Image (cartoon, rainbow, N blue to C red; front, side, top):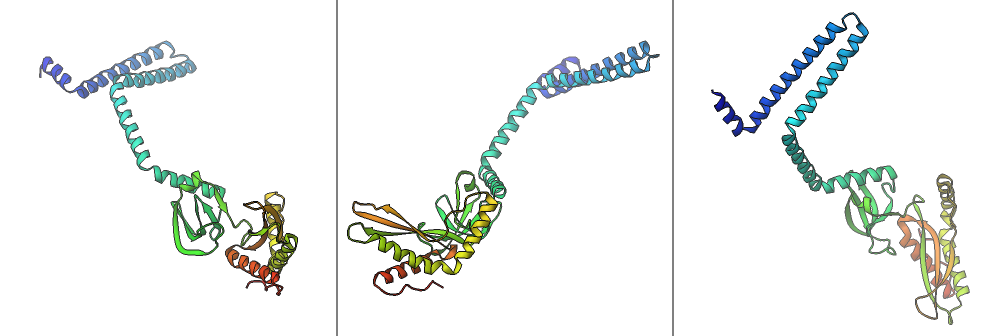
Length: 287
């Protein structure tokens, strides 16, 4: 092969030209290093400390020169490879976006521990009891259709773990198996004796909650000590609030109840209250 043929081959195959340039450059760096080492040894042969220090400097400088030269020679190809890798990374990020968010949400859930298996939670409009959880999903036994309904629908809802990155989690089981439930009784402000109605409603709530009230108080005190918060009022109590229209008021009853029996307990309280209004005996606590 003549020099002209070799030059033509290099022009037709740029990679071959880069390879030849690399070999020539590395050969030149090795020759410079050998010459520098020889000069240092001849000049400082009788000074071991200086000789060792200069040999290390020559080695490091020639290594840096070799790396810098290779980067300059292959700069265009390195730029192409970097762009290709960036495109692949972007494609993987977009393609695996949901998976990455699920894993991140699962990590956040594991660190913050907003709920445990069996807790009743609400997140992103979905409410239910936690049946199962994994790195990618959380399965709920649905409760609904709204927050005032406490009956299970018989359906399960599988939520992606990514929901826990963007949405707040409301845990209705902070007291373990108990919660503080709210019950609203509307009254006519002018026709009804709301103070009498308040006494009747409290009497029914006390009758229903007495069997487990002490247990709830112990759990709330333990939670307050553990979290460093003031314990809320546990025993049944009534708040008086204005109604939706003029002349109406609401008696808002708050009382503790087992978290999975809120519907039954509310029904027992209302039955006892309406029985007392008719002059009958307050119904016994729901079993």
